[in-house]
Image (cartoon, rainbow, N blue to C red; front, side):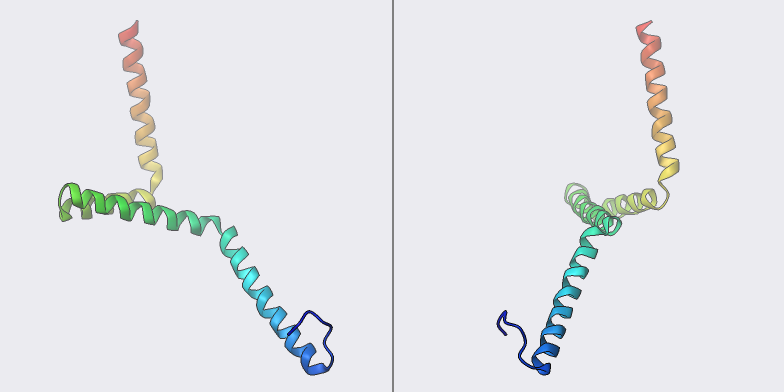
Length: 101
């Protein structure tokens, strides 16, 4: 169909339907791009898969499974891990200050 104005009702319906399909595809593509949470989750999953494969290459399959289970546990409940790391950083800073005094 050319870019001309439809000549009859059938061409108008076909043009309308084609335009609707194109708009639907465009909106779906935009929706996927704007869904940051899903994109980040997919990216993290991909990186974890790569890291798990590397752990398996460097050690063994059992260690890789344990690594992945640990990573999934951290993703499911990151607050205790964050608090633990923050506490460790504070202890290290205190020890460094005492050594420098």
